[in-house]
Length: 111
Image (cartoon, rainbow, N blue to C red; front, side, top):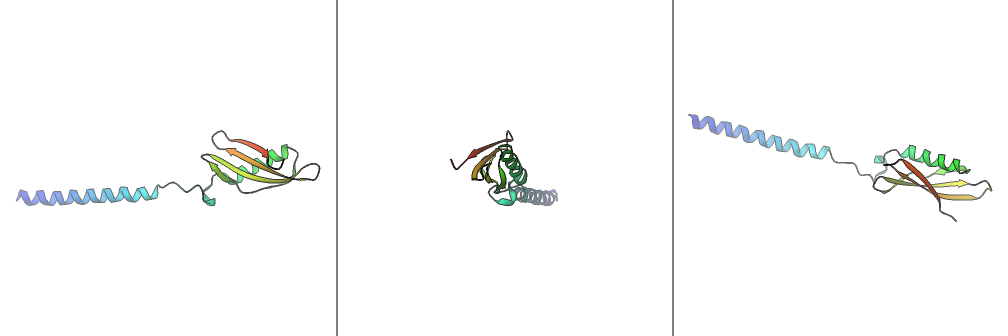
């Protein structure tokens, strides 16, 4: 009689272990990190663009248009700025943003 109870208990423990393993596998699917190369998952896209525009304004540029930021590496983002300088000439700039240091640098592309 005790043999029958042990069999039932082992079967119950096996089911619990199976359910536990299945739960872990299912939770692993839910915790997958987002793909940072998809536009919707990029962090701080709007603030990066506004910080780039602020830098261009500080350089004395007008009619500033900032393209959407794109990933340039781990924790780094780049955006292209189209603007007009004080002489009325069109200018293209590259704005780089490092998320670790929150530092923005702007370089001219058309020199």
